[in-house]
Image (cartoon, rainbow, N blue to C red; front, side, top):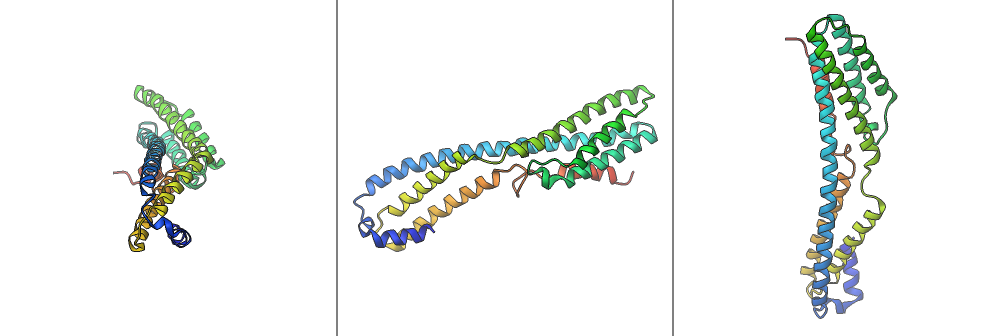
Length: 240
């Protein structure tokens, strides 16, 4: 696209192929490029921080789930089996809801599974001091799991990438960078076209990066449900 615009500009305004205006173009290009790089770097850093926070929340949810699975073996057989079944049902529901939760939607099945998990712990009859201690610890881990899931859903619902005002600034500065490259005076087209193509590729790559980072739970860069799957593996693996 930018190369086509460049070809049109070179034919329509042949005077721009000279270097009479290059001093001004160099100054403007330097200022615009600095603003573009600074703004984009700040934005990418902020978006990456959101992904890191989202990843930390999912890891916290998975860690709490694994700990609940391991501590459940301390309770009586009936209580432990009930807890593991409820925890497995919740983790499977959480993984199943991931595509929808990534867009900020919660699934009633996961909410109900979490409620049943709380009920499973409320029905535990702790008989020994160890069971009483781990029951208290398990409730704390269960609250951590619940809070992490709530944070995950709310983060996906509210973090939908830069607002339109920021996108307008991104497109404006990108257009100015490309515009300066297009009107830069280069007499030989064989040197000018590769220069504009290179700048266009860099701008496009940066825009693609912003789009990939805009949603914490979507895409290759986004957070994955692997910590939740790890809980399922712990619950379903055969005993040693």
